[in-house]
Length: 524
Image (cartoon, rainbow, N blue to C red; front, side):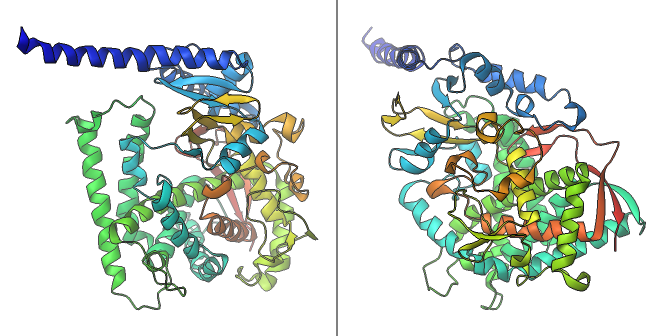
């Protein structure tokens, strides 16, 4: 009998811990929020509401949106759409046994992202998600994050980004030429611009990161695409500790992909390190090649940052441009305004340059910076060009990242709410950007001119995030998007193809589920 005591005691400890974590705590937390008027869907043992979320998403994406309507919340975030209609805009739901508070109130969002940085941090990735993003800026915390952030910030200054303009322009010109050649040199042709822009974005990232071409980095992107699919599938399920060590088919595939990606990036690093010290690509900057003589990152750390940059940079830029082109194809009056601006700035049909980027402006006024986005690069005089306003409005209606997550490390006060430690926060960017109380009754309409006026609240618009963890690559993202859009518009008129199906879907980023089929007609 004595030999049975330790196993029985262990079983008792496990049982008590399970009951405490999965039954007692959820009941206590739900009661705590209910007293404050915050309700939500019922808690289900072990899975929480994750199965309902998956089923709602599956149903939502099974049918497209009719008539090119931009009211897409019920399709992209169907769980929030359903629950907010029933329980209010601030509600509590459960991912496994983790309580998750979701809200759209700008003051509360600002508190989470800006004002409570000491008690609210980034929600940690589960071990499977870490493989996709590496141990880069997106997932790091504390002092290590601060070191990586400082080095990455030096690499993405506006001066650095402007130096990459020739590479962006050259890559874009080559891609547009390929579009025409692949369609037999016709003046009119149809193409899925979403696929084409992913390839273009990948080529630009390869040039900026490694001074190489898409072909040299192509293998990495192909591997990451496979890794993305597997990680997304795993991320939508409640993670069971230790599950990644089981020899399942998916786990073996993910492990092999991770090893191959890291080795491929490592080979590019070794190859690049042999180049002249005058190289100013991202890789050399991360490794410490900067005027401030700051110490750079180690090889494994650079691999992690490059994995993040490869994935996040390609996905967000390509999807932003895809939606911008779809919107311009839907709204020819804005397309015409933009083309006139491009011809005015780029005289004699010249391509855009770093020097004339600032000339894409209609008015120039001095304002306080109300938004988190990059405006123009001319100090206090902030212009609002057509292209910039179109990109801002695109990111309002179709933000590449539709939600942010954070985690309370200790008890915090948000507005009138007392929030216990270990509560997760889910900040639905898409819902905030479409909220009629914030943006008016035309919140679901395409109206770039709304950005000719500064926003009233910092947290009413945050496509790049807010606060200390605001996207470090936003300068590059905006410059790249402006240049590519200007070069496409100067060369082609755009019309939505009859084969286009309006079906935005959220995977890691917001993308057109069935592609973006556009009719191109050559202008020059």
